[in-house]
Length: 112
Length: 522
Image (cartoon, rainbow over all chains, first blue to last red; front, side, top):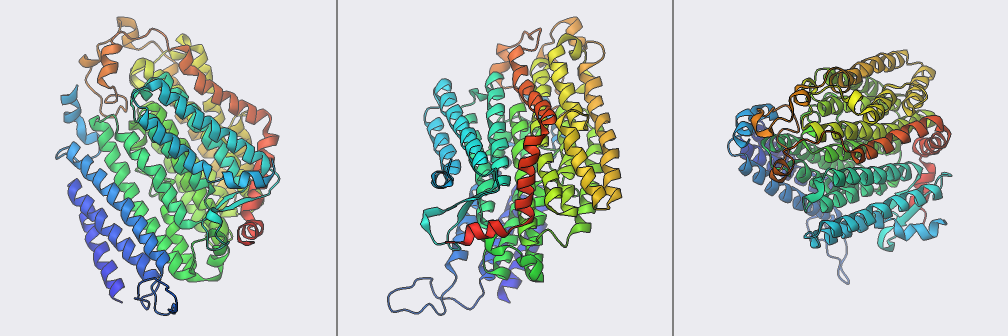
C-alpha cells in the first residue's frame, strides 16, 4: 500500500512539473516520474521479502527480496540520471527559451 | 552457414558497433581513420545480417543464451526470420546514410561516426533481444545517440526540436519501464518466450502488456501520440533524419509486432488497432499536405505510412503479418530514398522550403527521376515495391472482411500522391527559383526561416567554405538515393524473394511455438 501511495504522489508531482513552462521544472518532473517507475518496479516483486538478496551457505532464501528487480531499477536509474544531465544541459544551452521550434524566431535571427 | 557458427556471433551485433564507436572516438583527429573504422563496422554488420538472413530464411531460429546461463534465466539473443530481415534492412540503412553523410561532409563532426555506430548497436540489439527489459535498454542505447545527433549542430531550431523529441521520449521511456515492471509483477518474468500467450490467459498481464504497447506505439508515432515526430525529425541534418526515420520509429513498430504477437497471440485488440491505425493513416497524410518544407512533408507523411505497416495487426495472421513486414521493409527503403533525394536538393539549394525551390527536374533530370520513382513507389504504382506492399495490405483487409480498412488504404494512397505532387510541383517542376536567375544569394543576407530545418543547420565552416553556390547538384550526392530507388524497383519486379521471406517471418510471428521451443529448450 505504501508503494501505491508513493507512486501516486510521485506521478502526480511529476506530471504537474512536466506541464510547467520552464525546462528545468520539466526536467525535475521527469526525474519524479522516473522515480515512480523505479518504485513501481520494486513493488512488482512484492513487498514481503525485505532481506538483502544474498544467499550464503546454510541460509534459506525465505524472506529475501527479488534481486532481478533491483538490477532493473539500478539500470533504469543510471539511464534516467544520464538523460537528466543531458536535458539540463539543453535547458542551459537555450537560456530561458524552451518553446517549440516556431518560438525561436528571434534567437535564430540573432545567430545569423 | 550452420547455425552453430552463427550462434556465438549474435551478441557481436551489439558489441562490435559499440567497440568500433569507441575506436572511432579514439581516432577522432583523423576523419579518414574514423571513416575506415565506421565503414568496416557497418559493412561487417551488413554481411553478418545477410549471412544470418540466409541461415534462417527457412524459418529456423538461432538462439544464443548469453554467458551460457540456462534457458529462462539467461537474457537470450534470438535470430528468427523477422529479426534477420530487419537486421539486414537496418544495416543497409546505416551504411547508405553514412555514405550520404560522408558525401555532404556532415561527418566532419568528430562525434558523428561514433554516435551512429552506437545508435546502430542499439537498433540491432533491439531487433535481436528476446527479453522485454533488454528491449527497453536497447531502445535507450539507440535513443541516446539520436538525442545528441539531433541537437549536435547547436542551432536554436535544432535544440528546440531536440527538447521536444527528448522530453517526449523520456516520458515514453518512463511509461515503457513502468509497463515492463507491471508485466514482471503480473507474470513473474520478462523473457518474451516465457511470456508467450500469457496476456490472453490473464487480464492482469494483458493490461500490463497494454502499457508496454502504448509506450511502443508512442515510439512508433501512432495517432494520437504522433505530434512529436514532425516537430523534431526535420530539424536534424539530412543523413540523420533519414537514419532516424529508417531505424528508430521502426523499433517501436517491431516491438509492437513482437509483443502483440507473442503475449497477446495477436488477439483481443482488433478494434483498437483498426481505429488507431486508420486514424494514423489519415491524420499523417493530411498533416503532410499542410507542411511547407520537403522534409517536414516527408516526416509527417511517415506517420501515415506507419499506419499502413501496422494495420495488418487488426487482422492478425501469417499472411497479414507477412503483408505488414513486407510493407515495413519497402517503406524503410523508399522513405530513405526520398529523404536522401530531397537532401541532395537541400544541400545544393541550402533551403528545404517548397516556395524557394523549383525547376530541379529540368536542371537535374537524374535527381528528378530518382525522386519520382521513389515517390510513385510510396504511392503504390506498379511495378514498384509499393504496389506489391499496398496490394498485400488491401488484399488482407478484404479477406478479413474489413472493407473500411481497404477503402481507407486506397483513399489515403490518393492523398499520398497529392503530398508527393506537392513536393514535385514545388521543387522539381516550375520555373527556376530567384536565386538561380539572379546569382547566388549571400546566406547571411537571407532572413532565417524558422520552419525551415536547414536554416540553422549550417556550421560556420560550411558558410565560409561555400559562399559560392555550386551550379549543379554534385552527381555523387544523387548516388545513395539512386541506389535505394533501384532497390525499390528491384523489389517491385522481383517481389518473390522478399515475399517468401516475409511469409516465413509472418508465420514465425503468428505462431510462436517454434520461437518458444527454440528459446526455452536447453
